[in-house]
Image (cartoon, rainbow, N blue to C red; front, side):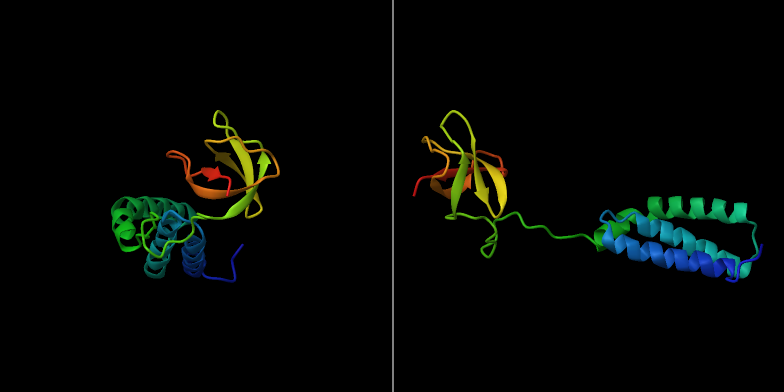
Length: 151
């Protein structure tokens, strides 16, 4: 059965689709399969191949592009992350007043409700459920447990 689209066009458009999918998925890996599709499309324009030859070329071209180009792509498309030390970094809720949802004691973490989510909280004083506390910092080295105190 013959397709209404040329095989090279199908491979090329599949490569374009994979390149767009890469924009939505982190990791810089899917685009190399798109490059494999584009290699097959380019070769098909110059030389007719069977389907099994096309698939073999796709696999080889994709693997080679990953091995040879991934490190270079990672340097070009390197992201920047914030470590919280910038002066304008204000995502930490220091000073926010929140409600205690599970009792907190110096020996055991409790729970607080902050931004509609429940978080673990520690304190050096006993705090009962329903009391309002102020977030001071993270507890220890954890960025998932807040250190709180009564205002």
